[in-house]
Length: 316
Ligand SMILES: Cc1cc2nc3c(=O)[nH]c(=O)nc-3n(C[C@H](O)[C@H](O)[C@H](O)COP(=O)(O)OP(=O)(O)OC[C@H]3O[C@@H](n4cnc5c(N)ncnc54)[C@H](O)[C@@H]3O)c2cc1C
Image (cartoon, rainbow, N blue to C red):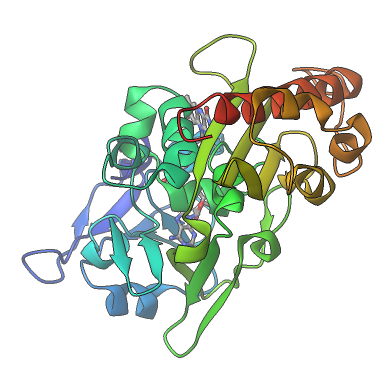
């Protein structure tokens, strides 16, 4: 749903039910630039419309916040929220697929997901507040590429891959290769993110998400940690750890993961993760929310806390 604050600037073409129609909502204001607003219901129509200069809009919770000028970049807004194929979570042979316009509220309430997705569902509960969770989407979170995006560390745990499409090509790449830096992704101007794919092999074990902010709600993370463990015969057989807001891009911690594999699945094991293994894969900055040293120290505490929480559980 496009934010009404943006709508006043647009010419609307919504072909969802009645075929193409144009209706001018542009106010008689010379400071506003008129832009086309398109809200197709079919993916192929959206792919036809994505070209250089087209602004893709999902929940608009990031877009609206980044729009301080009265005019929009480009001449056209493509709202992808009416396309059923881009929304929802389904299981297929060998993988799970999350549509990019799936809202945080939908993820939060997806009780049918296996426990490996718990970190993602907990992160969904932490994104902004209920209103933001109702509009904001997982795809928007990824494409916005904020180092503080709460959705990214839980998806890294699940070895998530992204599916990108244009009218003529389709490609798939690991999420780790997709997010290149703050506000930078591998998305080409004519591409849409059309799916997030989780291999079945990574949807195992249990996971948890821990977020640190200056307050409990409506807060951008100082640091967040996601952890997933697989345990067999009371031994950790697979570990996935990731940290956000402590480097330009949320990062997995391969050295700390290696330290856990083969260790007994009891809470004390968490304390054995070395400082070096955690800090070695992080490069926090100092900013208005916290300084680098605080972030590094907090991340180490949070990683151990997350692992301890999982090892305290009934299946550990
Ligand atoms: C008050 C407030 C609080 C917030 N709190 C949090 C928080 O706690 N944690 C957090 O992580 N975020 C937070 N956010 C940020 C935001 O809500 C999330 O990142 C949300 O998931 C963005 O989704 P969206 O659908 O609104 O994206 P949009 O704003 O619609 O789009 C974001 C970007 O992604 C692009 N895009 C979207 N979908 C696609 C697609 N399928 N293909 C290609 N490009 C696409 C858009 O062009 C745009 O560049 C907050 C925002 C606000 C306003």
